Image (cartoon, rainbow, N blue to C red; front, side):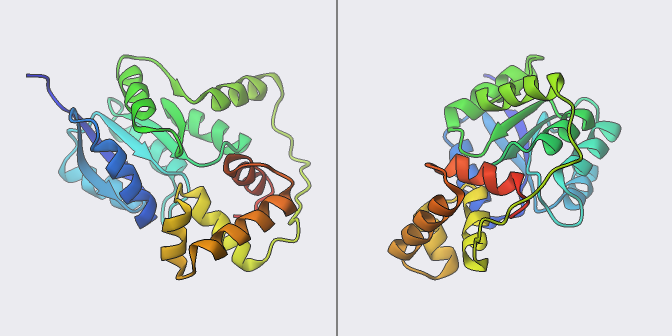
Length: 216
């Protein structure tokens, strides 16, 4: 009988956590042993149970974010692999996550098969990265981060920013509607306005552009 892969998840958004757990449960050999809502809670739980093979780590969390938590995990438990799981591939965050000791970096929109494959590759000693993340890494190596960045708010309203945060966490339109207590059609209308203002054509481009301009 194959030994299960013991997984911990650090994610502060309840809806995103449920969506991720549902995807993970599609693969029987992945066993979710710990769930934490921030980096501090994760470290506290690891003190009690640290027989973990790999952590799926969100970036933006209260008390202790994903980069800080990754750095501390690798100090205390160097054998545990960490894959950063997020909806955007910001240059600075990518650089900091890799420097903190992350073994991989995946987008939340990756499907269950992709996540499982990257977990297996990481535990085998590889480096898990979505194709778009890999390209970002190459550009990052070739061109250092610039401190002279100008940000644009693109005229997004507070409500539109709120929806962008929901998108960033990998939620569907239906989940966003339920979470914000608005109709599905209202969500679609807001998303159309966001795409128009940001001048993008899809969710990933919108989240990336909003993140690059610190709108979330």
